[in-house]
Length: 263
Image (tube, rainbow, N blue to C red):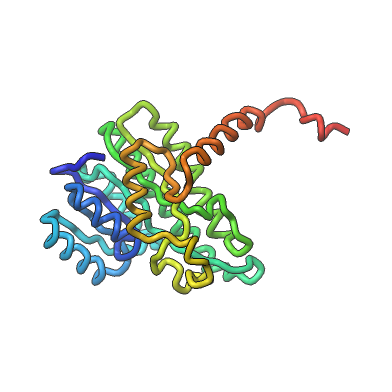
């Protein structure tokens, strides 16, 4: 993704952590920004700092993506603003704990953010970018989409959805000017974990990546044309997983029972 002079990137969950880091890097690459998050004060502070540091225009759009009216305003911006060529679909939350004690309302809010809002924004961007045959959709998943924990049922389920959705979207836009990347960071040193039910302090230091390194990996993977970027995973291991899935996927649908099921 080379530097741009006139294009805009829309980043959700931009008021801190990974979203703010993505915004800073995109500004460094010459993009103007639309920064989306709930906390307008923090967005405004970030936007002012980016503009002062880089000279790029940084607009703020305060929105709670679990509220339909707010979500619709961001969808509209993606569908109607021809300057927006990049969506960083980063907004998301975490919820960890045994499923038998989970708060159904909290789980519902997480699904609204991590699945419903994610899908609607990706769909809006896909429609707009497809019409121009140009654009980048960077969908943020998690290593916990596949490295599932006993306390991560809802969270891992939502992030596995992001992976499947993104893979289908990438196939849909194969051989076009629209690029789709799935970013799957592991544990990263941000405030994401605070109050999630799984504190970062419970994890060994060797399992936690710095925010700067994680975002560096995301852009390096994007520049290299990766479909999936996992910052700490050797290339050969993901390739092996994909090869295995390609080998077995034709057998997922068939008219005959596998021999082990015949009685």
